[in-house]
Image (cartoon, rainbow, N blue to C red; front, side, top):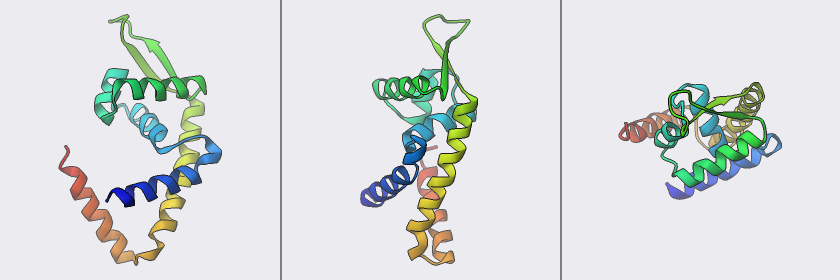
Length: 129
């Protein structure tokens, strides 16, 4: 499973390289866009990313204009995070490239096998909920 993860991650990141978005960036942007987290603390918990790694990712995305970090009105120590229009555009573009890379990897499987793999992996990760 680890090797499959490494292969899929490398292929996806390579495919989306022109956008500057890697899977870890996409995970953060998607969680923010979908409202799964309003603060860095919530974001780290939702994605299972340690604080220092998350700060590095958010700093990078903010520097590139893909996320905006704002102090929350109720707690000046906390930051709210918002995806920008550029972040939305970059995420869409990278998503298309990620999907293409995964389609290339899965070409060794038939349609039924791809469906089975999807079902099995969905059940596997659902344990974490």
